[in-house]
Image 1 (tube, helix red, strand yellow):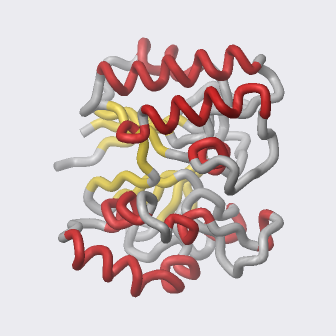
Image 2: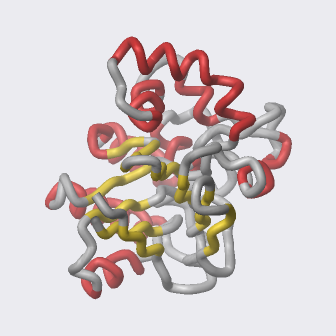
Length: 233
């Protein structure tokens, strides 16, 4: 199965070019952070998000839309505020997210590959593993991503969006929408292969080995590229 993973868009329309030029991709995963831009006008940011939502609606089984920290500040407004907040379009963005919340998720998993916006560190996972395991048993989840997506719809959603001191917060480990590169590059969840954005990189880069690794794809600020991955079923 061929996957195409696209980094933080922040209003950038490059994803349309990727999709058009790569019909061989079986599943597209957009890693989140669709709004907030210092390059595109607010009206362009909203329009781009509407196009992304339409892309998902017309290809429900082929497209995965993940929520990033710049998404959740509108999704859960007025909570989880972060930099770049655009008050002029806040209500419209919130309505787009809430009206289409069934189209968004915080994690996606295929075998031992996991996609989240910011990545999962062992430190954060160990802190919340009892709760995650409890959810797994309660809903009969078959993988970690299912548990995380369920939690995001409960009053415990805040654990997914915790901010560590690396990003100006007070927690000892950042959640899956806020973890910093410094938290994940040498502490990626053991036994899994991750794909994440959130921390800007000059080019797509993978750190780790054949059993445990993490690939950072938030590169659209410097290069128009997306991460291609083939997983044998």
